[in-house]
Each structure stands twice: as structure tokens, then as C-alpha cells.
Length: 215
Image 1 (cartoon, rainbow, N blue to C red):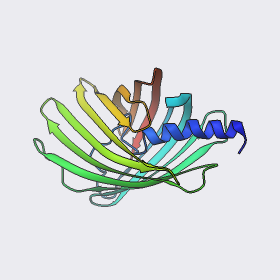
Image 2: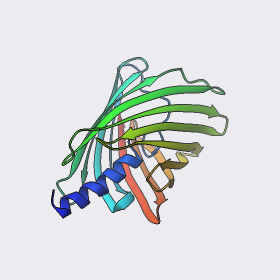
Image 3: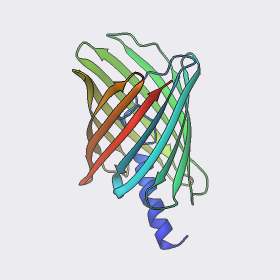
């Protein structure tokens, strides 16, 4: 691999490793909810990630059975031929209930162009609804082909802000700089959401802007 593709690959891989789970836009931290059986959604967004990677991403998800959601994502770095494809399954371990924790688990893999083999990841998710908002906790790990297993921890708080919902989040993973972020989402039409986020990691400013369509 020449120096330029190798540098691009390293940049994109760093961005992917910091956020391997396909969280609900615009969060990087996932919640323990899944679509109802027979329902799904399609998310699309543009983002500046750690390492100055600028990615276009499209991510559909569908729940064929109650409590089980299957998802995919395709990302491409702006201005290059480098891309990645991800597949994951999300299993809800307990049903949502206000005032109680409910849980889910995610298993997935990501294959990046120019990379031999796939990066595998797993995440345990705990969410709890409170009168003022919701708290989400992620505990996971990812492993690149031939590389070490990298643990990760994430926390997020969501709260209704009138016609929009805002969030604050923190995400840390071994060998990566922590990410601090905030975001907003709002339903602009029935089943169509507009969302965005702003964050900091390792001295870099991160951002994203996207759409989510429920079906």
C-alpha cells in the first residue's frame, strides 16, 4: 500500500474505531431501544470525524421480529475512494419502562477497503427514562484484524427542549482521544427528522448534519 492510501486508511480507521456502533442520529452513544417489529428507518449524514476524516454515511435498519433490529451502514471519505461497509444486529434484552433500566446488546463487523479482514465489535447498552430525560450507557470493545481488543465506554443524556430533543455525550476508547459532544434532533415532517451534532476530540472540532426517515 502506498503512503497516501495508507494515511487515508489510518485516518478513516481511527474515525470508525471511535464510533463502531450505529447509534440513533445524532448520538454517538446508542440507546437500548429498537424499532417495532415490521418497522425500520433510514439515516444519512455528513460528518467531520477525528483525524479530519470527512465521511458520507447511509445506514438503514429494520426489525423483522420484536426485539431484534438488523442494521447496515456504508461510509465513504469525501474526496477519496476509501469506503467501509458495516453489518450489525441489535437485540433488546428487556423492554423499556419509565423509572427502570432496560438493556440491549449489539454485535457487528466493519470491513474497510484496503483492509484485510473485518473489524469486529460488541456493545452492551443500558438506558433509563427519567422525568427530565433519559440516560444511556455503552460498554463495548472492538478488534481490528491482527490488532488488540480496544475497550470503550460511553455516556449520554437526552432531554426534550420544546420542539426539539437535545443531548450531551462523552465517549472514550483505548488508544483514542475522548469525544465530548452535544446535538439536536427535530421532526420537521411526519416520520422525517433533521439532526446535527457538534463535538471536540483531541483538539479537533467535530460536526455532523443528517436526516432520518422512519418507515
